[in-house]
Every structure is written in structure tokens, then in C-alpha cells.
Length: 140
Image 1 (cartoon, rainbow, N blue to C red):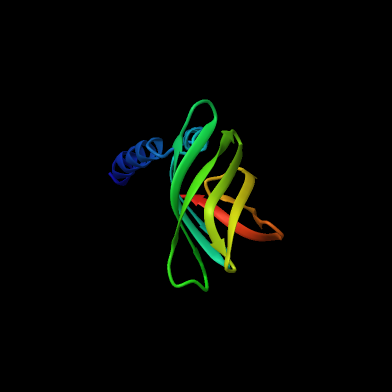
Image 2: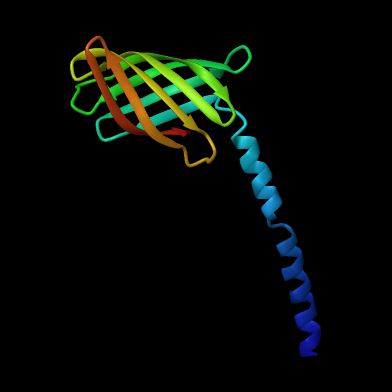
């Protein structure tokens, strides 16, 4: 009598386990997510934040727009973004930025290999000025 109750419970448990994703399912889903950089992104560092949207262009080109905010600034500044995505390498140029009172351009290159984002240097340049800021770019 007791054994007859365990068998249906065991069958139900095994059937429920069949619904769980396999390692291959998870790998396939992550691989699909990393195939494109199109969509909303944010970037965070100790000194600035970025919020932007990327769209696909011709070939491996990407572009977009958004805002940046220096930590000490009162408000945001509109930015434009251009670049390329040749998987896994993402290269972006941010125009329209203002940092430490200077109009700067930002460049970033990193490998997009994890949904956790890309951590690396954002190189800010202007005539006679250069500063590197470590930033984490993440797709939202």
C-alpha cells in the first residue's frame, strides 16, 4: 500500500525534472542573447553614468543616442553613439559628452561574452586632454 503511493510521487518528480532546462538549453539561450547588442544599455562608473539605446546599421555597424551624467553634474547631457559589433568585440564612440567641464569624446572597446556586461576603460579625449574611466556597460 505504501509503495503504491511512492511510485506516482516518483513519476511526478521525474516528469517535473524533464521540464527543467538542460545545460545545452541554457547555453543556447545565452548564445542567442549575445548575438546582438541592439536595445537599451547603461554604463556605470564612480564618476559618470550612461543611458543609451543601440540599433543595428549596415553590416556590423551600430548607432544610437542617449544621455550621460557626470556624478558632480546637476543634469544629464544628450549623447550620440556610433560603433561596430563584430562578435564578440564591441567598439563604441560616444559624442556630445561633457566631463570635468570639457567637451570630450569617449571611446570604448570590449568583448561582449557574458550577459553580465563588459567592464573596461572608457577613454575620454579632447584637445590637450585625456582621461581613462573604468566603466561597466550592460544591456538592460
